[in-house]
Image (cartoon, rainbow, N blue to C red; front, side, top):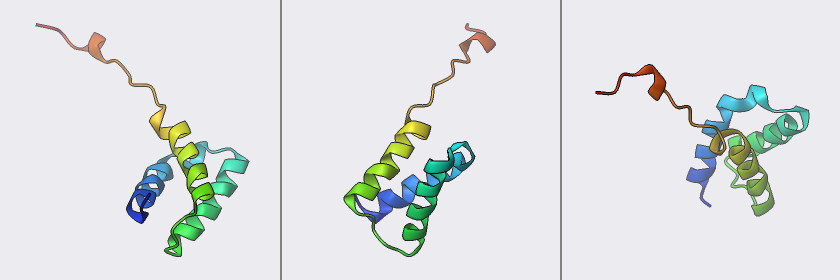
Length: 72
C-alpha cells in the first residue's frame, strides 16, 4: 500500500470520527498523528486502519429509493 492509499483512508474515515468508540478513537488519533508527520504506516498499523475503514465505510448499506420515484 502506498502513501496515497493511506491518505485516501484518512480522508474517508474523517467523516466517521464521531461514531468511533473510545478505543477506536484513541487508535485512530495515534495513526493520524503518524500520518501527519508524513510517516508511512507499517503493516500492522495499516491493518488497523483498514479494519476501521471496512467497519465504517465499506460495510454501509445501500439504501433503495426506488419506492419514491415513478417508473415509466
